[in-house]
Amino acid sequence: MDRREFVEVCAVGGGSLAATLAGTAWAADAKPRSYGRVQLLDDLGKPLKATQLKPQTNYVFHYPFEATPVFLLDLGKPATPTALATRDKQAYQWPGGVGPKRSLVAFSAICAHKLVYPTKELSFISFRKGAAVNPQTPSKGNDLIHCCADHSQYDPARGAQVLSGPAEQPLCAVLIEHDAKTDGLVAVGTLGGELFDDFFKKYEMKLSLEAGPNAKQAVARSAVVRELDQFCRNPVRC
Image (cartoon, rainbow, N blue to C red; front, side, top):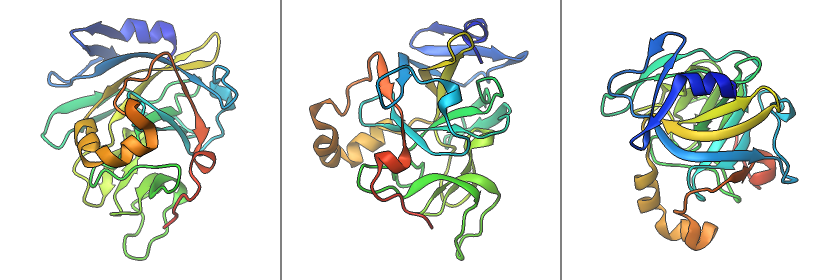
């Protein structure tokens, strides 16, 4: 959605977002969360334009905290609104993709099972163009986010809902605003089951080494977007 559409459908209050999209109200127990507006930048530090994104390519940035990675994807096709639920049965309505083709989506890159995430050295989780190849866990579809650690598969075109594997809920969605005039992208909040507290608790020592004392600090103003293959030295394929 562009800025005008986002303003029309979202109201910020009490630390959470309430929204209506295409005439469909958010589920009563949905709790979108606002973390502030963060401009997405390219690797040269300039505002990233939606048209710069290569379709079906993994991009990574950090939001809402300095140490929490996010996948940004241009699926190359529209992503439609989808009714989902968290592992504790809280229903919510994912609003679908944004941008000119409604093909741009963003999700927390923290797997909803064992909290596997991409680091600069290694990544067991990523988007896979086509079918994921694994003899033990056949792909449940094409163009999915696949975690090689536990073989959970998520469909990014339907709010990262779980298609197979032990994950108990979709990946947490990151809400993105697209400005049709500038073609810029801004992260504005999250929707769905957050796992940030568990993530920081499990990886406290590791994150302190990777991100330093600011690991739990909220991202302010801007975040740099990079291709996964540039961010990570060894993206694992399975």
